[in-house]
Length: 309
Image (cartoon, rainbow, N blue to C red):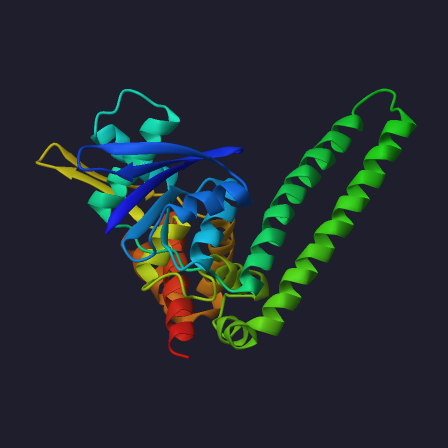
C-alpha cells in the first residue's frame, strides 16, 4: 500500500506521492476539476490517501475519493502536529506538510474513513450552523444586557438587537426541531434505546448518534470516550513523576458538556451510575472527578445498548 499525503487549503491541495527516494509533490485546484485530475493519477487498488480534518475544505476531495472506492483516512491535525515534532521538522510549507502526512500514513496506518449515512451528514451540517447561531445569540444577549446600565439607551439600537435576537432564536428552534425529526425518522430504534437509559434525553441521544454516525464509527466505548474527550490523563516516569491529570479535552466539546450535565440526572435515577458516583466519593474523589466517571459510564451503557441491537 502506498500512502499519499494531502495538505488541504481553501483553493488548492498538495499531494505527496511516494517515490523510491523521498516524495514527489503536485498541486491541484480544490474543486471538482482538480479532484478529478488527482483521482486520475491514482490506481484504486494500491493507494491510500491521508488528509487532515480541516473542516469543509477537504470534504469535496474526501467524498469524491470514497465515491471512487479509493481508500482515504481523515486524521486529527493534532496527530500530525505531534508527529512533526517527533520528526524534528523545522520547516513548514504545504509541500513539507504533505510529505509529513504521507510519512505519518506509512508509519501509523490510520483507519480508512467510512462515509456516514446521508441523514447523519444533514444533521452534522445543521449542528454546525446551530453551534454558530448559539454563539451569536449569547454575544447579542450579553450586548443587550450591557445596554441596560447606560444612562441613556438608543431605542433604535435596542429595537434592532431585539429583532435580531428574536430571529436567531426562531432559527435555532427550527434547526433543533429539524435535527430531532431526522433522528426520529432515520434512527428511531436507536433513539428509543438510548433514551431508555436513565440520564440520557433526546438531545444527548441525538448528539451521540450524530457524533458516532449511528454508532458505526467506533469499535468500543473507550474509543468513543477518547473522541469525546472524557478520558483521564496520566503522567508517570520513574519515581519523580506520577501525575493523575484531568480529562484530555481533545474531542467534541458540545457532546462533552451534554454528558456532564446528563451525569447530574444519572446519579439520581440511574442505579449503576449512582453506585459509581457514591463509590468514588467514598474514596475521597472530588465531585467533578466522580461525575466524569459517571459520564464515561453513560457512554459505555449507550454503546452497549446500541451495539446489542
